[in-house]
Each structure stands twice: as structure tokens, then as C-alpha cells.
Image: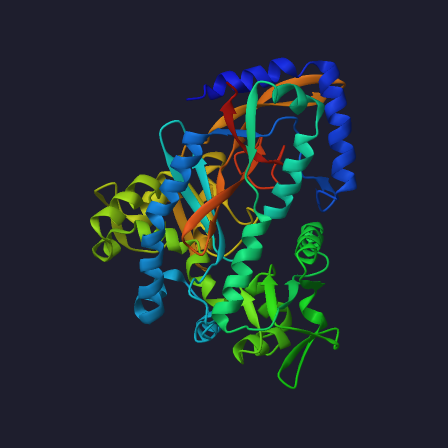
Length: 450
């Protein structure tokens, strides 16, 4: 078994100022050459990738797999029972789109579980079941790091294994297309707004899909027409497989329910991944549904144990009585009085938008946030400890090593298995790509060389 702290220390010892300067220069050059930016910000601002042991990675995959049957259980019940489905806080237009049969087995063929891996636990804080980003960024960052001077020195001591993701995206797209009924070779469209900061990743996917012989274009939803049973990009090119990166809520808000993309999906003229039904599990309320004691009879003993082990206490914010680790509580007064233990999250936002960290919020503002949150669906979740690791960066030509908080976000394919992992770093407690001191780093599995 590898001594991971010793391996990290060895990496830092090899990263002297000269090696750090050469590695940073090459990293900067490669980020620009490969357009690895979130908007105008470089994706990576540190000089070490995330290292995991093989045992850690195996445990991560096993833990996620243990909870996925419970997610599938609440999805199946929600799909069949509108009263139960009310717990997820779906809007009426979302309810309408649920009636569209995607002819795809999994509601979220591509997904990402956002977690925090501490010394003795793995906690799931969000399930990104709609538009999980960054597999292509991860692949390219892995290639970039393999070429750095510091990795040339480090790999003399350790075997370093990347966790690629682009091929999984291609596989699930093609599997979904075949389930949907596609027989001819698909013509793909990567769907999102042209102005989004992740546009450069769409280019990476387009290049990858084309390298495997698939026609692929990047298309803005506003550019489509639906005519004579075909979805046409720019009024010319027919498309029959959509890799959807646009958020469904934004698509409907900006273009309406009668936009060409929605019409084509409703009519079965195009296969879309992920389909509309992904919204059920994508809602942050899905974790509250798993966690709430009123739903415990739905789960097998094994599923209940997995939920208890990995899902922090989470409730939909409402005026009700519930339990907190076996103790009966009045939810709203409890949340108002225990802000230092809790996080408040909108049910359907992304990028950290609207999240309120109780321990960083003054009492008056916390209570104001609670009142505002009652107007639209929110969840409240128990605070969990944020892990940290030392990461080096170049400051004024010198290597400096500081602790950064990090999350662990494994990719889930077909709602079934894990392969690959996104790691984000931050000097702020809210970890996402826009956070203070934020950085994305590739994740590698380490083994000691014999």
C-alpha cells in the first residue's frame, strides 16, 4: 500500500524553485495553446495534480455504487407517483416535460457526484445529474501535467495513472442513441449558449468526436429550426443526437417550451442526453428525499446503511417537524438557531449561486436568508468538515506550498458505475471553479515503483 502523504512530500521536495519556474512556464504555455480556460481564467493555478491511492479510488467507486440503487429507487417512485414527486419541488413546466418518454433507460447517463472525502468518511453534498462538466478539461489537463518538468522527475519514483473521461461521454451518447432507436450513424450537436465560459470544452469534445469519425457541431439553441420532422442547425444541417450542456431551465426560460429543440425531443425526432427526466434527481432536494425519515420505508436495509454512511442530514426547508439524528425538532426554529452547523442551498442552481454558509453569515443575515428561501424551494444541509491538502504554486518566482480545501467529484455513467474524477481546489469554503483561489486539477492514481 502506498504512503500517500510521503508521495506528496516527495513531489514537493523535487519541486525546487528552478523546476517550479520551468514547470509554471510550460503550464502557462500549454493552458494557452489548448485553451484551457474558464472564461478568461486559467483552469489550473497550482503545480501539483491531485493524487489518490488505488485503495482510495476503489473505495470511492464502491461508495458511490452503494448509494446509486437508492437514487434509482426514489426516481422510479417519483416517476410513478406525483404526490411523492412533490418533494422534489418541480415546476409545472418541468412536470409537463416529464411526460416525454426519452426511450433511454437511465435518466442521467452522464452525471457527477460532488463529494468531500475526509480521513474517515465520504459525504455526498450534490448530485449533478443534468449537465456534468469538465471530463474533457480533465483529460487535457492530465496530458499537460504529464509533460511538465516536475512530472519527469516524479515519475522516476511513482507510477502515475490518469482517469480519462471523454471516451465515457462518447460511449454513453452512443448507447443512449441506440436505446432511443437510432440506427444510422448519428450526427451530433453539442448544445449550449455560445457565450458560456465553458465553450472551450465544447471545442475539445467536438475535436474528440470528430477524431472518432462522427459528425459533430457546436450549436446555440437559438440557431435551430424544426421543420418536416427534422431538427436543423442554422436551418441546414440535420441533427439526430444532442449532447446537452445547456441547462433545461435556461433553455425554457430564454426560448420557451415551444422552441425547436424541445419540440423535436417531444416528437421523438432527436435523441437528447441527458433527457428531461434528469431533472428529478438533479434537484438538490433528491438528497433530502434520501435523508428524510419519512421516506425510510422505501429503502432496503443495505440502501439505508449506504444513505446513512454518505448522505449528510438534509431537509427541504419548510414549516414542519422532523428529526435531527434521532431527535425530534421543529425545523424552522432549529435552522434559525443552529446556523453554524448548516448550509442553505437553492433547489436548482449551479456554480455556488445562492448558497449561504451559516458559519460565515451574521445572525441577522442568516435569518433574512431563511425568510427569503421560503419563497422558492431550498434545502438545508448539515455542515461537513472540509478536507485540505498542501498544493504548490509559484509566487514571485518562488515555490510556495499552502493548504487548499478540495472536493472529490467522481463521474457516474448510466447511473451505475464510476470512472474518473474531477477535483477542485479553493482557499474559500465554497468550492467551485469561480471560488476564491479556485483551481481545477487532474486526478491521478499513484502506485509506488518497485
